[in-house]
Length: 135
Image (cartoon, rainbow, N blue to C red; front, side):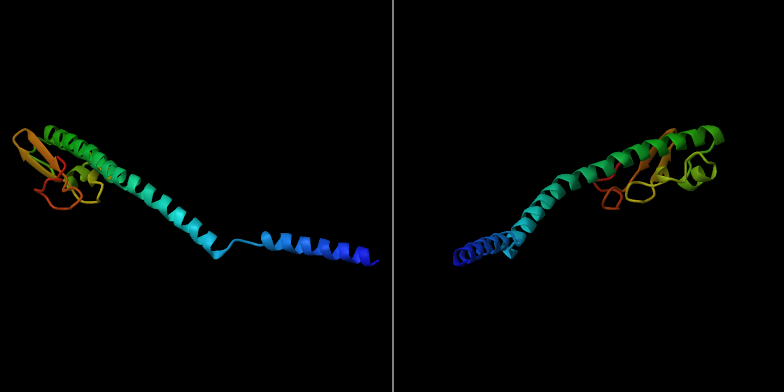
């Protein structure tokens, strides 16, 4: 009986030790995982953010071309000198969607000089006559 008691005690100790070893993660292990995840997120952020800016520029370039074509159509149709975005929207030459504003949700500037139409977006800084303007 004593031998069986020693075996069950030894067996019990082994089970208890095994449970303690798989009980959970330590705070250090959790912190290491969090730091690794933060490093991965930072790397992805550095890779994605410049692409987002470039996508906005490309979207605005397409909007500039759309508005320029709409102004040219307006001038030809109405025998007018130039048009504003509001006039293009009223005459339904432009949709009220994003083609009437740039990617930064600002209005386009339209200038007409005879038959030459120039449509400009202020770009990311929001100021005209700077180097980031999109024509």
